[in-house]
Image (cartoon, rainbow, N blue to C red; front, side, top):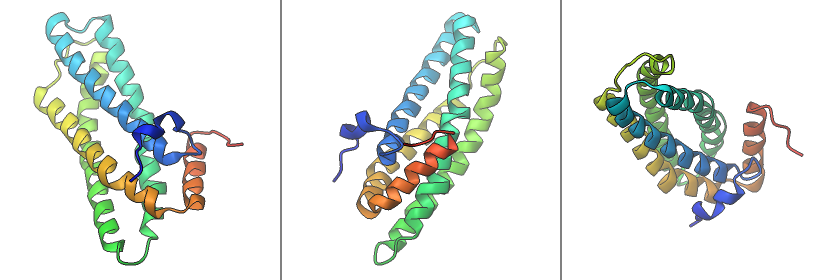
Length: 179
């Protein structure tokens, strides 16, 4: 089994699976920041530090977070759907679960995003603990499945050419030209 933790340093468009893994770490770090923001708001209200944290979280999930889901939904998942043979039913079931997760996560983000927009403007809006717990749990559990099941499966089933094409598509999405 491939160790993605050892690949994090090589995360690039030339190694798109490692890049997806590295993004998971960044998403989890943003979840930690959300928890800290919630505590900070309770103690300090919506001061400049809270506003900046809200802006940074918004920026991350509105750009990199969206790219990450697009990378999976538009590039990785369709390529994995091309797999034939005995593993196809398991692959398809996994992808359906992950797509369903993405829809639920997007709805939770939309709700949380509305609060963060207010905070970013300096409005003293408390973070709803139930919503925050739901959002963080959704992401944590989803990332666990992708790390445990999806990425090792993709590393095993995809050809070097397919992996390179996924990396190229990810780079193009971000306006990056590969050499």
